[in-house]
Image (cartoon, rainbow, N blue to C red):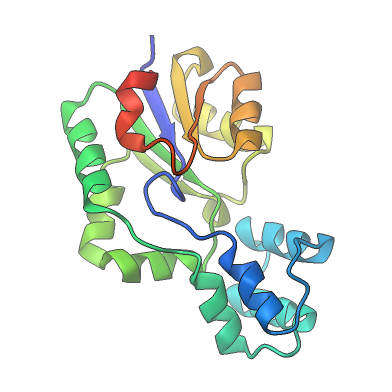
Length: 201
């Protein structure tokens, strides 16, 4: 029996354009591919090992034709809309109180302030208040799909894996959680929506 639900954030609640960064980089004369260097910098940023300032400097070394302000603009441009109906959905689910709700997001210290700006601080707070815990990778220094992050959430909240359901749009993340005994829904972006949750439990 499912008692706990862990939600991803990006492309589950807030819409993303994950390809915009590569399009913008190519437009500015850079390599539009996910290079090992870019991947390493992003991973370090997502677990809070480097500050936003250090992140921008390191990206500037990879893309010397792009100004620091433009790097920040490009990086944040992947964050799109947070539809009201999804906020209403999670608020209703929280009010029903049938499940313990958690958020677990790979994110960073540039995206979260921009998300708050997009949503408005009041709406962002309403969203946060739907969850018992609101775990952001750069704050807890752990990221998906590492097993440690799922074990951290389970241990911190005395959750049993077999009683826990996890929703994410990235198969690598749901595969990792499944291997720990967590029931998962790999949400297909553009084909499925989080409001279909109860049909998946």
